[in-house]
Length: 283
Image (cartoon, rainbow, N blue to C red; front, side, top):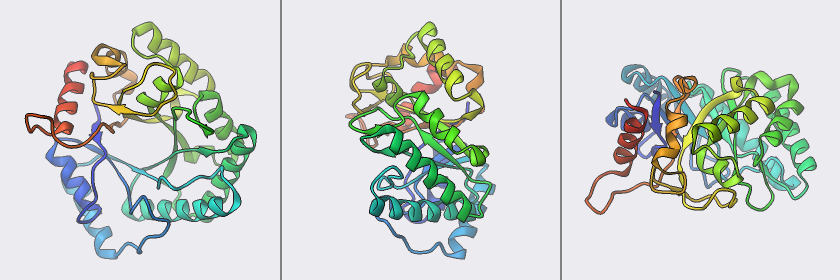
């Protein structure tokens, strides 16, 4: 099982890898810059060397970066142009650092057809301008609040289809809280197989390249994105067993995005959630 967590880059990007190693993780998620700002200082050659050396030295197998939360490729022109520039910059940073995947929230638009067209066109522009061809962009499943796109597997498939020329550079990151909130159940073997069959039919299993592991605070189909610790939400401990024991997930990065901090006894939540995942999986 390729288990990791989203960890801080405070002190430099390489520090996220060192933090991952301290948990015994061999995959990690991270931002490549301040996610709440449009622009960022250029990466120094020293930072790039430190990161690549740490990845090699620590044996980190796959890294899943996350694009800025400000990015909306489906939005109005001013925001969309900033989003395209920010995404191109993030792809370049990932390429320099040797990061394999960059996760993107697809975007938001009250007209889904217009939004999907704008996302696809934006991705085509970004890929055309960015020479970092080894980095793949992973569209993240969403809970579906408001006018956000990516709630259904068919919406994700539509974006992928519209980017046919660049489809090899695209994949999907499945978030367990998000799909549950969107109405896809995974809590029993039958429900899980039904959900994955729907994913296979619409998108294709070969496009599932990462998973965000989160329990959900709100019920199935709520469309509310509220992450909870593993086993403490509406999915529950047993609800994660079908996914975590699926042999098809053995090489897929499983990234904890559960709340950070310490429990009332002073224990680190990432350690608690990782231990819980391993117990459920029988590892």
